[in-house]
Amino acid sequence: MTPAELWRSSAFRSALSYGLIIATFVAATFGAIYIELVRELDERLKVRTAAIIDTYTAIDRANGADVLVKSLNNLTETARKPDRIYLVTTAEGRFVAGNIKPVERFDGWKAIERSDFVSDYNWSDDETTFVASWATLSSGDLLLVGLSDHDVEEAREELIEGFLVGLLAIVVVTLLTGAWFARKNHLRILAIGQALDKVATGSVGLRVPVQGRNDDLDLVGEQINDTLDRLDAMMGSLRQISAGIAHELKTPISRLKQHLDEVSGSQATVKQFRQATLQALVQVDEIIGTFDALLRISQIEAGTRKNSFKPVSLNDLVENVVEIYVPVAEDAGHRLIAGLPDDDLRISGDRELLTQLLVNLVENAIRHCPEPAEISVNASPAPGGPVVMVSDNGPGIPADEREKVMTRLYKLDNGRMAEGAGLGLSLVKAVADLHGAALSMDDNRPGLIVRVEFPENLVWPQPDVG
Image (cartoon, rainbow, N blue to C red; front, side, top):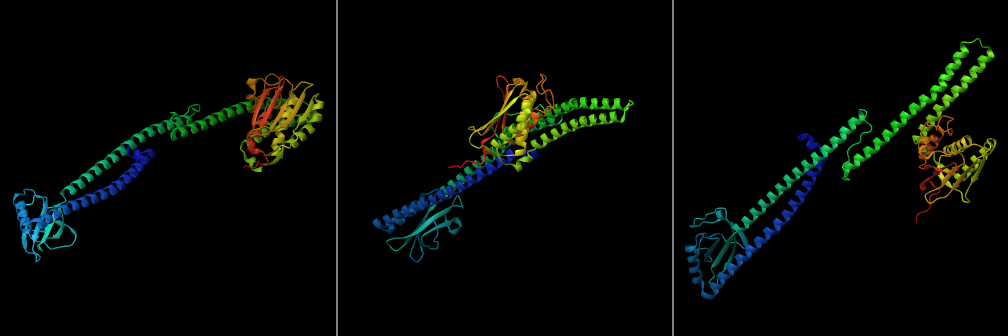
């Protein structure tokens, strides 16, 4: 993985962003702790200095200034590495005792740098700072005491060093973690890309790898696989449609050509020519009808008709279709009846397409049931939404063929649905899918029962919530 690829990786950038956020938080936290800790150390240094001043002033009050001066002179002579400065001057500023030369008097506390005073003592650290304060002795002389902040500075340096080491550790861990995640995700994305490249070259059955971690890449992989599944199904449907069209149209076109060849090669009369032309037109109309049905199904599947959904009464729909087809069923030797609930079942849908759905189901039952048969069309409420059922006591459809008969141009070999183009139930399924309805077929013992279960969200009007 090249540095450029690493930088483009979203995982690396995310890790870097999180690392920056953590580093900023740590820096802010350290800053607050550092300021508070240094303030506390400074306060403790002042407390220690004040305690020493109190001790010296107590000696002065108890034993006099001469004893205090003698004690300070002894300290100056014996101290090897003094951590403090002390000075006694007269009120006029003349030197009395101490390890530094007189300095300007000040009020309160002051940080005195090594360069601010003169001393005969050879200081080992010229950068030492002393926190000092003046006090007045009983004799009227002035006492200056200051403690070195060397320990405070060491603590500061150790804190800063610790912070920098921790910050460096955060940066290193962030970079390594980001690089590791980036490489890991890069390999997974590379595998997805390779799988899609193979799919693009024709291996539509191939699927992208999913590792079962339920992360975002797995989610993307599952969505891609779902899309590939639908693509594979669509391509399979397209192959089936292409083969079906070729098979379905080959016979009528060949028959039409043979018919026209016979007429054109014979000494037929004008009447015979006219009759042959009419027969040819009928065959051409059948071919055009097949294409029209295919086009209509495609238009329905596109979903554009959803925009024209309006309230539709299923009771009226069933009643009207049954009323129209009762004479047709009687002519075929069948009995057609309707079963409706007392309450009106209303849904939001396309009335024309829903009528076509019912018409196709009723016509299939009339056409393919041997007489006498009883065909019923029922509409009823259900917990999940209204249900429309068309049932008959004919030969039925084998269980392993029920899914297939809803595909385009598929026809059974046992006689039922052997006639026609095999598009009636395909259109029924397309209309059901457009309305989000579940289409199912079951054994009516004997016969077939077709259920169209509409979803609750299509019920009109929608029930009040709360």
